[in-house]
Image 1: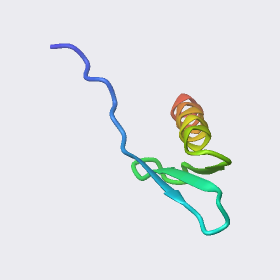
Image 2 (image 1 turned 90 degrees about the horizontal axis):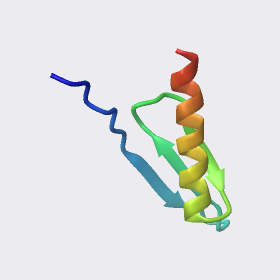
Image 3 (image 1 turned 60 degrees about the horizontal axis):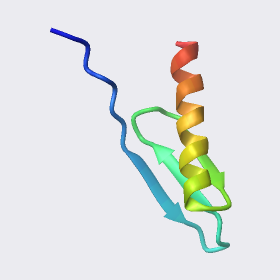
Image 4 (image 1 turned 180 degrees about the vertical axis):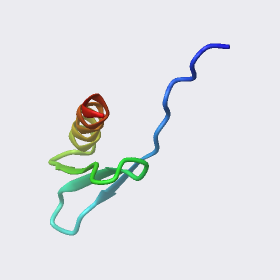
Length: 55
């Protein structure tokens, strides 16, 4: 049996001021803003990798 890759759900919303916010619910504190939807997703993925690497 091999290790299964970790899978997370990224939730993305657009704020009233136009910024995008992305969050990974499975990782407390993994929430970040971006100027576009893609930027917010890329930034929260990078944040999640840093958090997991520190564990």
